[in-house]
Length: 183
Image (cartoon, rainbow, N blue to C red; front, side, top):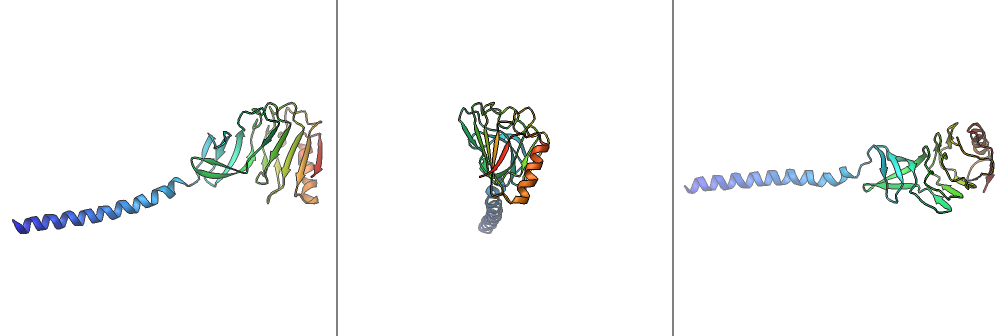
């Protein structure tokens, strides 16, 4: 009987050690896996904006949080479920909730203004401030569709003369008829 009890105890200890090391290995990896960027459609980011994220760690701004502020600044990064994403694109009607905005500030991470990006923006919009990032800014030919751009000034920062020329040409193709200034 004594030998039988010893065998059972040894077996139980061995099983506990094996299972304990296996569960510890899996438990240690779980938090890191939860922090990986994932593709998500129109999710709420920290701060209230709606974004679409990709597994590559970038996000496009779908909609700013409803506000009556005169100045609306787009963050260069947003957090969704504890994961940070770089905002690189402005999507259709992103500023429709900014009902009193006179100025929109875009970060240097923005490299694309999508179709209808400014559609629905406040009729009192006067200024769009853009800081040139590492990549040139692509402007969809319908980015300003439905917007009276004649009284809007785009102020650009950190843009070379060559890039400024390309940017102005792309804005013109997009229907922008306002002023472009280097700040």
